[in-house]
Length: 277
Image (cartoon, rainbow, N blue to C red; front, top):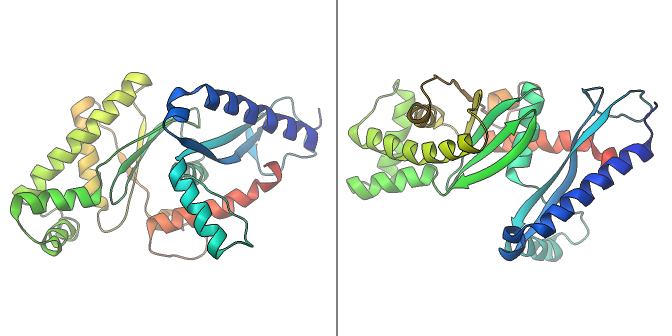
């Protein structure tokens, strides 16, 4: 059959209705005060092949992935307040960090069959779990780069500048380490391993681990994640670091900032599916 705009619209509306029902039935989401955002179609496939514009194509099977993110209501209200005051005449779209990273990850690697994306930010570490190219779980722990810095400051009484220099030297001097760094690597890897263990109990051992962290901490947190993996599985898992060089390898420009590169690629990818929203 030939794919029409009505078929895609019906699929999207069906997905929205299904997600809305699940959201309303979720005691956690409603009681904790979350609001749904994103509401976008992230990919469309015809006969299991991803396409940008399916209208007019012929096929026997059409499928799409439609994503809705949940964000605390007070954060959404704050963003709307700033928008109304400063950018009233502009269109506002709110997206979750995991959606942006997932979209770019799938564009980079095409298939993420059974994988886990770990994003270490300043104050948290976020986990995205994938099965059959779909994001099936998103969770986080309140441990990040700054946690690493603060914990070492507390135990050594060193100022933050000294600790940050110590962390940077780990990468610059071929893994030059100290007792303080090793202790903190062990401490943070334990917390990551606890989350990964819970993820594995709910699904399966990820075949690939993708890591996103700002430079110059790539090597340090690669070792943190590697330590965490050793605690929960006897099989060696390679940690694939997604840095700004990989993000910009298929696009013009180089910001030098990993997260900004992800955001830029997500923005341009999103518009490729605007006709299906």
